[in-house]
Amino acid sequence: MPADKSGNISLATPHMSEEGYELEYINRAFADNYIAPLGRNVDELESKLCEYLDTRNIVALSSGTASLHLAMILAGADRGDHVFCQSITFSASANPIRYVGANPVFIDSEYGSWNMSPEALRAAVKKYGVPKAIVAVDLYGMPADYDGIESVCEEYGIVLIEDAAEALGSTYKGRHCGTFGQWGVLSFNGNKIITTSGGGALICPDAEAAAHAKKLATQAREPFPWYEHKEVGYNYRLSNICAGIGCGQMKVLDRRVARKREIFGLYTRLLENFPLTFQKDSADTKSNCWLTSCLIGRDAGITPTQLIGRLKAAGIEARHAWKPMHMQEVFSDAGYVTAGGESVCEDIFARGVCLPSDTKLTDDDISRVCEVIRSCF
Image (cartoon, rainbow, N blue to C red; front, side):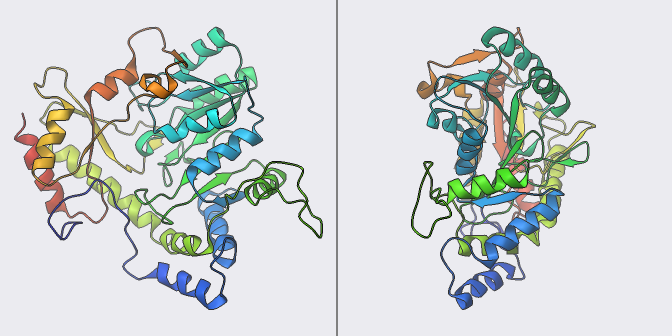
């Protein structure tokens, strides 16, 4: 059966475990009468994430955006500082830069991963000086070139924040996305590979940093018998109910990654003779294939808008690639740096399409999508 009972095919929607694991944890929260933020489910989700990512010091928060905001604060980004950020990404990667009053400078991508170009990053340092931090993104689940990016960060002593919101389950040279740089960010929004309804996590460099993040996320209360505050705090901790959904979802994460990769494989096989170039793994990466994305050939005779329209008419949801941040009106005053040639991320936006990648879709559903795509060429 398709993901939608009406027969429509969605891009990516929540997929609860067939075994009902999530309900077990939700019911536990009700039995504990602990439905507010914090509780056993929050603790267990943080523990499960640490075990899965082979790391320590993870703080479960209300969203990936909240996680990025705290990463900015804890990285010391402040008013007037420069923070470099990948340009082709969702706006939540860039908005927290403005939250702290810093100035974003957007960095172009490279065609291999569609992620931040180390060459453009180095050019940005030469043009703007050493920034307070860099936000690298694992676009659509594809790991960035961390050898190249970390080399620049180490040379200049720059704090690296990894926006792995879309990349839980992806690896670079065998190491999990989210664990590169000093700070890592995950999202558990409804369309991500696993969900907590709404939620996220901040991966911290050490226990002291995690404790500070938890303090800021719970209104920055000091250890006094009354409410004492020395810092501005936020209401950013994850609900115990939502964390219960996440605990159940963690049990099927590997299953979801495997299915996403199967879906990618189906698309590439069924469309291999058509003018489409897929975002795909290098020898160093293993993407979770959160969204199967591709570029339409320059001479294919059809635009992303036309292709997406044809799919929509057939009851199939697809999307344009993210519009780069330096092209957005809200960031019209921000800098933008390429490696010196064409703007790669502008070309990706002009030719990119994200195809339905819902893990509930059957092979027949993917074949139906491909039939419509083939009819467009």
